[in-house]
Image 1 (cartoon, rainbow, N blue to C red):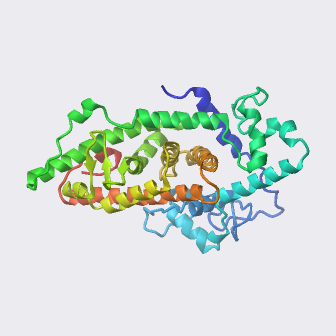
Image 2 (spheres, one colour):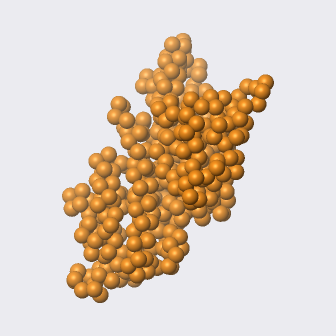
Image 3 (spheres, rainbow, N blue to C red):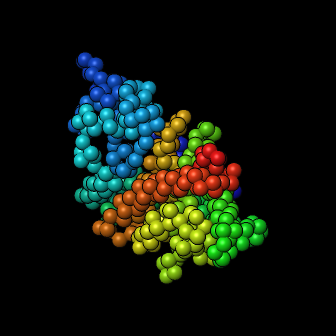
Length: 403
């Protein structure tokens, strides 16, 4: 059921190759990064920095990242602490003069590159036939052979005519796998649902407690499905076990919100779960978990207005799973995998959405809202602790809530 090792190998190789860029020219006199003290490679975004801090700043700005310092908000950033505290590292970047307005969003860079490439191919005589091999996306990364008389031969023509690069065979295969697993691990079994506490409608304290128990039991089933889905996402099994655990703990609440959006019914303003029971804001409030309900339902409505399809939901879920998190042992590998999924979402969006609406940027902007919802979920869990409402051990462990 899991993707073949060849698929995973392809992604890892792809991510690795994507990073093998030409390094900066050697300097006569060694200059140090103003942020962390590492060897500087030049002026990036208006300040002398190393490649690491350049990339960190670019990612932070393009993803609208929100970090939290665990050490008192006054860390002395050096080559060691830069990995430990992202909030203070970002503050240091800004204090030495790095300017957010200098960061060009990656999707804009990609659009510009594709436009130039399409124009160049258009101006070249017979380019659509002679250069079919190099123009076929994914041909170097395990895609179908370009001279087989299939749709691959038509892709260079499409690029030249529309300026939009088609998805490679590997990317299409990746999306198909994600959508399949998303459907496979979407809903709990009927047997599991029968074991959950019924949702009472009364107003007594006992009914209130039973509603809370029902919601937590549904949440456990949902998180278990998220874990099973994540294990099968191509690239996940190539990570260190410690990083797999870190990502699962950090992403589960955000992925749960995405799943809620997929189940949202705009007509009834409710989220419909596996038992076909609609859960409204009032249902959440009556179960004592309504603190973040308004924000969650606003997010669901926004996703509905964007008309996000199953493939986009699956890709967004993968991007959330491979997001940068504190305490990762190999954050660069996680980042490379995420970048591939982001690029696949960009290309999918360009191929399936009308031009000129900035759909890709709007889809990515939802990730910032998801991070906020995840933080709100953590705060709600803490408030439940104050109210002496204990979370089940499974949720307490995966969300790192000390009972």
